[in-house]
Each structure stands twice: as C-alpha cells, then as structure tokens.
Image: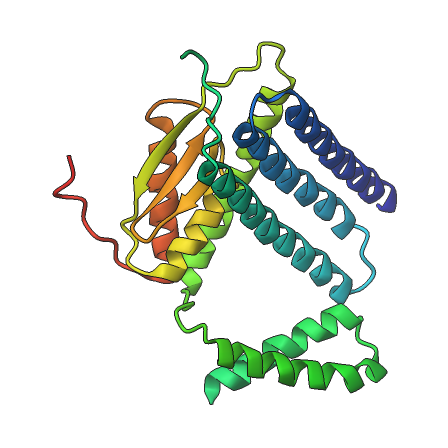
Length: 102
Length: 161
C-alpha cells in the first residue's frame, strides 16, 4: 500500500515539476510581458497544485496537510495579484502587446 | 459579536496549523490572534459573505479550469510554432459588488488564456492568448460561478449592443 502511495506521490510531484519547467520555457519563448505572465501564473498554479497534492499523500498529521493547502491558496492569491499588478503597470507605461499580424 | 467569535475560531485554527500544535506556541499565538482580530475589524472587510452551496459549485469548476489553463499554456510554450494570437478586451461586470469583482479579477488570471490587466469599477481589461469569442464565454461562465459563490444577483445585460 505504501509503495503505491509513494509511487503516486512521486508521479504527482514529477508532473508538477513538468509544469514549472513548461512555465519557464514559456517565460523564455513568449514574445512580450503579457504573454509571459500567462505562462508564469497558470503553469505555476497547476505545478504547485500537483506538488501539493503529491505531498499530501505523505503527510503525517492533519495540521501538516492543512498547512500545505493554505500555502497553495496563498501562492494562488499572491501570484494572481502580482501578475495583475505587473500587467497593469505595463499598460500604464504604454507597453504595446505583441500581435500575430499588424 | 458572533462574527468576532467565528473569526477568532478560524484564526486559532490557522495558528494551530502554522505552529503544528505545540502547546508552548500559544504564548505567541494568543497575542497574534488578538492583534489579527483587531486589525481585521479596524481595516473593515464586511462584504465577504459567501454561500456554502456556491462554494461547492465553484471549487470543482475552478480546479478544473485551473487544470486546463495550466495544460493550455504549457502546450503553447512547448509547441514549436508558438500558437499565440493575443488580444486585449474589455469586459463589463454584471456582478454588483466590489469584493466579488476583485475576487473575479484575480480568478481571471488563473483560467485558460485570460489575464486581468486593469481593473476599474465597472469593467476589467483582460489580456487573452487567443483572439475570438472563447475568452468572453470563459469570463461569463466564471462570473456566473462567482455570483453563485457570493450569493449575488447579476445585473441583466439588456441594453448592451
């Protein structure tokens, strides 16, 4: 039973790491600040969610599990707020968005 | 008074989570809870009433859309042709109250292909990864769920072209 649980936990954490990697690739490849923010907020949200889910399978106490969920919620709120502030500042400074065809 | 007791209970539960339940930690925990209670009421945050039924419907929706949002952007990052066609759109709120609108603005950034870029009272400017009607549909669905979460009625969109 623990073997299955550990394997599942490892698989979830690896899947989470994959999304962090994909988000970073997006950060490097996407053409402007707005599209890069998409890559960071959404891929990290999902990546961290999967890592938290994987770690939940290994917690030893209830408070540890709740703490992980609280961390995820706080990162979501902070990530979304930070992305919004960066995008708003970029708009205020008239940074044009990249378009497919002009 | 009831609100204060409920809030103190939640803060105590949070402290218990953070401290891992060590008894000696309450020496710091109780003053911290008192300070948080005082600040909470001092700064005033009245409008955050939500309904349980709304939360039960919102949570799976949000988790599912987060999942597809992450997969969508990961696929676009890794795809050699970089399939992006960004646009900036304006979305007029039908939600009546400010806290719910702020909540929705934040949630927008976690859904597939949308990012809230500027929030004004009546509307929000949204950067989208793909041009077209898909983003607006996504926002409308989110707004309905947020209205349900806070138990709010939405304004009708009758006079809009």
